[in-house]
Length: 74
Image (tube, rainbow, N blue to C red; front, side, top):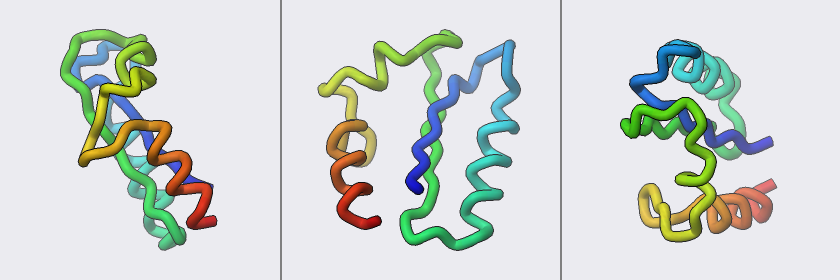
């Protein structure tokens, strides 16, 4: 299982600590592919249009490139 969580740091609906805690909890079990978290700062609770844009990259890869890499690791 691969997890890449996205959370807006200014989200007033869901505290950022929830995502941080979940990612840390998953990584406590030392998965083959570590869970990762990207904190966004765009002031939106619904930012899926941003993160699913192929031009949006974190650490040099977009979500689709990451999914393919993750699939190969499992």
